[in-house]
Length: 112
Image (cartoon, rainbow, N blue to C red; front, side):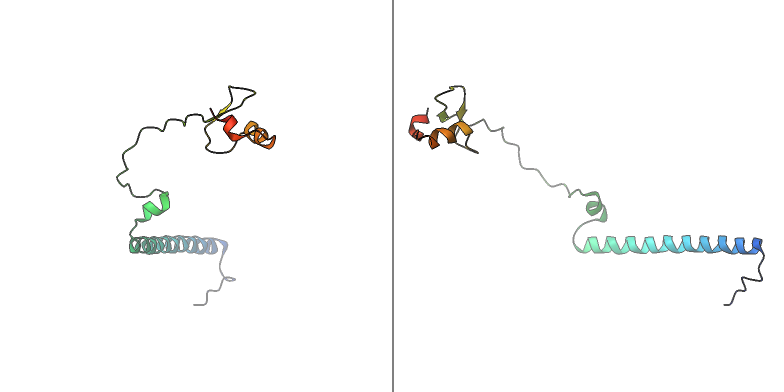
């Protein structure tokens, strides 16, 4: 398949170029179709559809019933210097609690 490009006119070369571009686009479409089919097959082998995997959403399952919102824990400790500051004893210790304990105040003295 030896094409003599040097012996072709500009018009003939442009026609050939257009044919080549069209052939490449057709091959690209075929390759994409084959890749999509392979991806769908691979996803199905794992129990998913390709749409589920690519959209980032999982298949919908029955959601557990929603429980009532948790009420905040009641305070167990109070800052003796500022009675407005309280702590439930859960989570990070407030600075006033840490400094009181470091100063030698008993945790029993901080309890409400």
